[in-house]
Image (cartoon, rainbow, N blue to C red):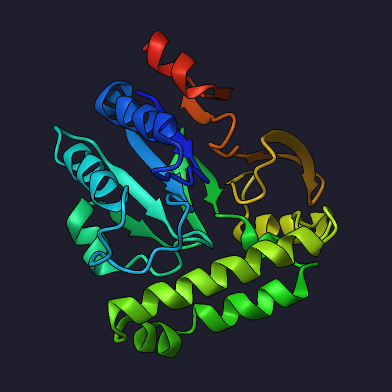
Length: 247
């Protein structure tokens, strides 16, 4: 059975074709997978809570819930920089398992490290400071105790600010650093790392303590899309429509 990995879907009512593609995947061949991993940024808008009924939130939750309750399917979701605040209420509504960033899984008897990828962008010092602030448990508690209307306004303002900030940064600043990649892989003693965030789909060969290792970067679901498939002891990238058609 295959294990599937996706990231940075950025599902939005503005791109109904990608939402339809996601639904087709989750109601189709993904149901035959050993496990399905979403490594962050499932939604395009910042996640502000299950009480936010802004489309396509309710539809996505329904898709995930139906998938989780279909046979022996296993759904794992990691928080990304658009969904720092996914919580127990979301996990309950979707029947998914929320996993930490980073997390280690076992495939074919070997450890594989999973991350969203934003913490690897260590040259982006301002972002890393903001990330530590927004993920602080006290800040998260205060945020979720605010009225929905206020949370929406804060989310809207932050979205505008971060979009402008990204445009002003050099491409290298918002990409991962090789030093951070090697250090985290060495720390967890792994030879395979899978992450998203940068939207730069690729397979990178790296060397960790003199051993060959591999870093898989998941692509986003804007103009293109991708799913990383692991089966028969190998990894491969596929366009989602192709995976659906062939399975």
